[in-house]
Image (cartoon, rainbow, N blue to C red; front, side):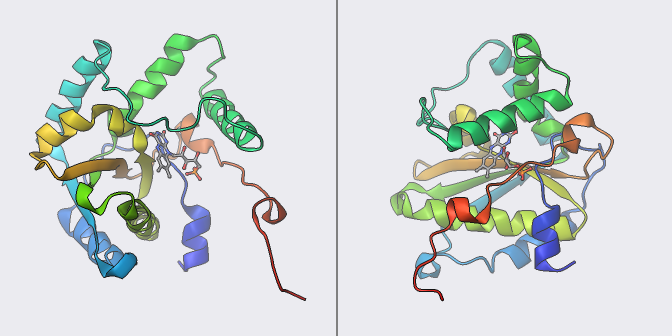
Length: 223
Ligand SMILES: Cc1cc2nc3c(=O)[nH]c(=O)nc-3n(C[C@H](O)[C@H](O)[C@H](O)COP(=O)(O)O)c2cc1C
């Protein structure tokens, strides 16, 4: 599989098979992924890989908190409240298309909450990753960690695995910090589910759209 094929094949998977992944597979992916670039090569990332009984215990604890409505306040909005065009349409179409795969209507609030709750089970994935960075790097680390994450997702694709990046975990960032035993300088940036895709799951049938080249590109100085 070449890079173009991996980029084209990667998609967010939200239903996984209950098949364990050997540690050596994860080690291989991460060893390769650390070639990702970072400003000044400071490599500001830390990745915490969780599986098995500790993952089950953590997810069970989060489920109790979720049902009790004990989500932590968002530090920032994932999307601005009054999202503008064309991003509003991109987001709306994506959300509706996702719920459509599950047959969830707009008014089925409970069904939609249930789908959101699925995030906090890592969609049944056997591997959970949390990406953290040292706060002293400030916002400079965000792009670096993002590139590291995408490199991991592409290498996972090459290895026949599937992934879903999950920013929703920021709503439990203190629970994560406690679970991982993070020091006061560490900040949670994102979660990631990894495993074998359940190819038959309706939610995994969604291939998302993208804007056309002319809608996001500004060429200057070309013939
Ligand atoms: C930083 C980041 C955070 C994301 N957080 C979530 C999330 O919390 N839950 C979720 O289901 N998908 C999440 N996604 C997946 C996006 O919804 C998905 O990438 C987007 O709709 C494009 O679809 P594709 O990944 O299938 O190409 C996230 C993606 C990124 C890059």
